[in-house]
Image 1 (cartoon, helix red, strand yellow):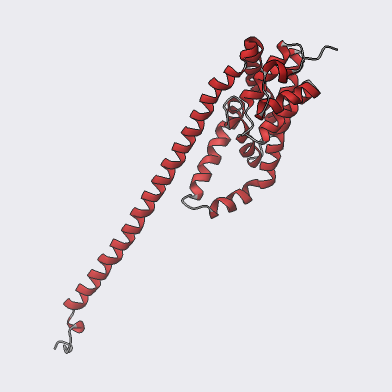
Image 2: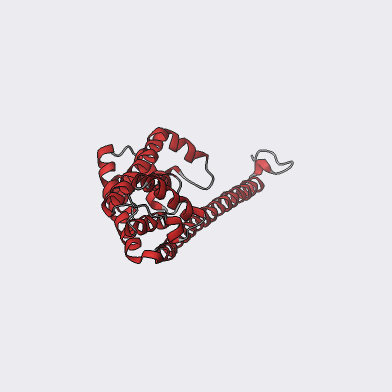
Length: 247
């Protein structure tokens, strides 16, 4: 069997690329599947590195193109199923208990999120598999909401197959320039993270402003009530010093 040393051919000598190249070199398709399963569990491991590198390996003959797609999709499903299981273990009661301890959040926010997921859960799982960062995290709420496992697995497999196919074929076609995929998809990942950070910042700002207004309203209300009480006492004959009952 002809074996191509990817680490030498593509020169990913360190980092995630070197680690993934080593797995594919040693294990072939199962190594690529293992790398993607771990990428699902640990989002900092970038699929935009692992998948194009797997496509490059297929182009060099280290692994077949079809096995590369099948193994990486299987790895995606296994990793997503593990996160789904974590979500089921957490459950709604624990989620609400944890949510209630967080500052600046309301139970109503979680209720709205649940309602949204009940309406759009299948689309979120399917399309979320093709969005960097979200592709890993979407499995947890699916487990918390106890989406039917067969439905979750099918949607995850379909979404993962589409994402994996695009990135593996890109690496296959680009050859030694497979790392260009990381550059472009990395921009998308950073945009998603930036959008999420802005959304969180906006949410916190709205909550802080609402809390400030609420405290101000309560303080003003107390001040007005106190002023009214003092005025009433000054105006009442019974409240005047030395005043007796009127005759």
